[in-house]
Image 1 (tube, protein in one colour):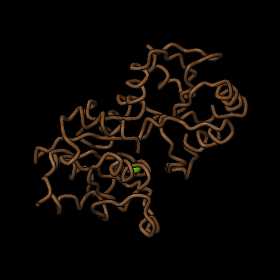
Image 2: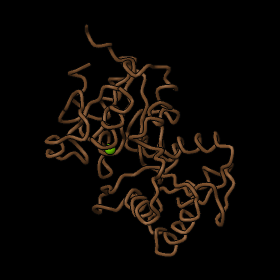
Image 3: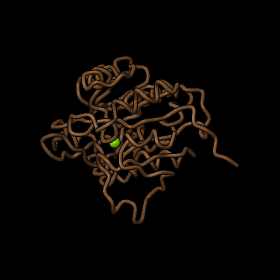
Image 4: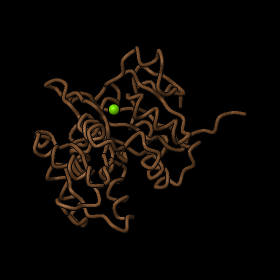
Length: 256
Ligand SMILES: [Mg+2]
């Protein structure tokens, strides 16, 4: 049986459309092509230091023709999750712009229901981590906006929020609920917004542990691109198996 032709693409941002502050070669043209061919698009990112509005401004400045309501990040997924919880007092370890995005959620720094960890940069000091550790030891649940261990900027590599989440999990003997990729919840929110079934959408990303594993968790087909964080040894004993592997997103139009 021929595979179902796709109706939609769920495309990663960092490392797939841009890298180190510059658009990936051919990425802008590929987005334009997909739009012209009437595919539905969603942009799924684990970047949580920015709200969808800020990401939209950044993508437009880079020259991408995308809309704010096409951008899904873990911050948005987390807000949806917290709204659905009967008790949702939170201690937030996120930067101020992201905290403002959660303004409807009650803050409780002493006896919260959840510790929510996102990109916190230099906020991750001993005092802040130890406070979170104590809350977790008292039974507070841990939510991670995402669990990427590191990321690349023009200045070099940086520890990402996942490194601190892993530290807290190990110390407190707990497991974080992950809001971003590769969680199935995240991909399902995107599919629902498209009114697509899993076999009608294709994930495109550079990260085998978040994009490709997330696609596999949600039974979506996927394209791994060899840009951004991709390293050849990831294909030797892959943690997830992409349907296709391409040198970059610019080759997507050879397939569709
Ligand atoms: Mg990426």
